[in-house]
Length: 506
Image (cartoon, rainbow, N blue to C red; front, side, top):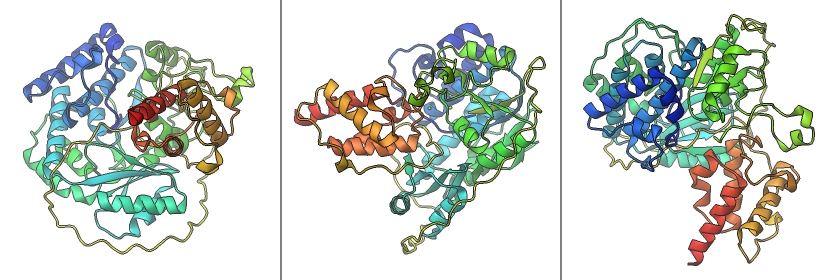
């Protein structure tokens, strides 16, 4: 199940709500818990695309992510897809406990809100930074500054880690990563966590959170921070403990795969955690139903036709190079766009490819020694319980993908922008810029092709490219436009450039 990702799209659960009684029941329970806490209905925006703002505070954002995750899980079960284990990333572990039947839905919703409120009360001004290197290097990078609250927070994939720490120190880390040529991306999350700095919020949560009923559950829940299955652990202690602990998703995925799991299903809107899975264990089958044009058909195919291994990959093979070889194209429709969760599922009994089929042996990549880095003076100690005002940021962007950015020609190697910034002119210039960077012929870059879902441009590469576009057209805010990272196409970027230049000129 997903951690903190972007707020879901309006109307994303309309079809599932109409089809499945279990989905309607789950959303009703979440709405009931939200209403009892003075929050608005969670399901209305997800069922009806009524234009309601998704910027309604972190508690609503968390409960919307919970609703999407739980609804996807109920769709899977209703269509005959049985998980052998459910994995949650960060707060997603709470969604996993509810999906597995360990917690009543209402109790999980109330505990999620209590967690958010405890973090808000601490008012810690921190930040999380995704870095496109392995955990060992990321930990060394954080160690250069030698601050107790600046730590390796998440090991997501062989080349994707997350560092968490005080905002001013994260800026230092970002500069050092840039000097080393390591791609990085600040994560816009409401509450940075997985650092010892969260000890105060963890104590607060243990003291104030309502104790919740706990059942034996129907399915296993594998905890990436405990490094084991959840047993009879107290739910409040589990959620509080995760606030200061490191999330070891890479290790968890490899352990599940070694135990026989070959199919991973993401219970969110877009491929996020499944990217980590694909990078950690190449060759496994990953499915993200809500990213498909017909989620129900994708799930039914998963349950009924396990031989279609490549048909429902979270990233269909539709890159320009595939277009030159039509026989190599994937048969599935392209996903609607990019941010999501992982349930590990068994192939059905009638499947012709058994889940226990021996996987190819995995060889840990040997990274070259890191280049010398500048020495940064240690920051002064931070008081144990700092009191800093809190301003809720915008919803989270999609988590960064696990691949380093390719070196490309400097910005000034591209011709200066044309004087007339009409849409067609900008689009042609973007095709040239993106084609030169990616090594694709510009005429093969469709204006409506999803940069990530169809062209395979990883999130960190998109950040680099948006930076080049923003410099080229003198639009400094373009790089931070999360919608261009989560559902980016050349059309949307070109429209953003034309609009931004028009506003600047006006």
